[in-house]
Image 1 (cartoon, helix red, strand yellow):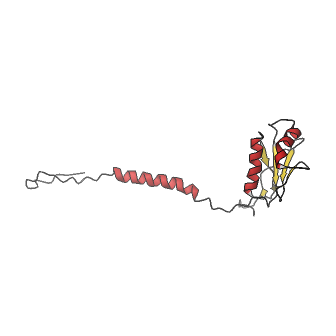
Image 2 (cartoon, rainbow, N blue to C red):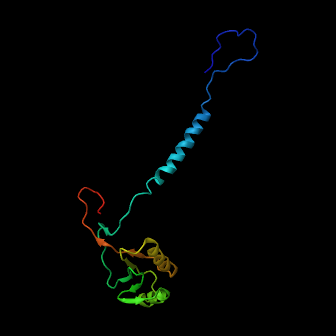
Image 3 (cartoon, helix red, strand yellow):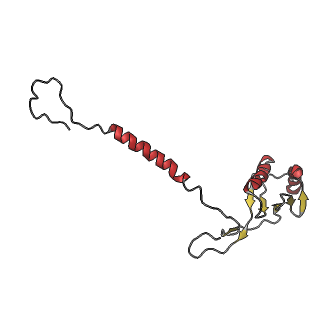
Amino acid sequence: MGAKLGDSGGDDLELNHEINVTPFIDVILVLLIIFMVAAPLATVDVPVDLPTSTAQPQPRPDKPVFLTVKSDLSLDLGETPVPREGLTGALESVTGGDREQRIFLRADKAVSYGDLMEVMNTLRNAGFLKVALVGLEGAPAANGALPK
């Protein structure tokens, strides 16, 4: 807000005492966006250990198809060892070509996340999109904390 207090002695240039808040608001909005984007990324360094689950078990189908990844990264379809190259054909023969059937994927605790993702990518490339991960049932935590 500017106010004219009197004649400044013949000077043709008048001083404007108004504060322009538009650049200030722009800076604040940019900072707000930066913090909104950066805040979720700050929680990435949380250690994760997922051997057990406290989720309610789902009803088991009559003839579930289990694909097991052992600690030596070999695959078993049911109780039968299967080479990685023959996984698609073995799945088609077990499921009868039904790509809508759910595949239950079990993995040893020693199998790395990357190796498990390779198996899941193989399943996806074969057309089996319904994959369920199998884990041990853990006791629910009393205070809502994550189990170790």
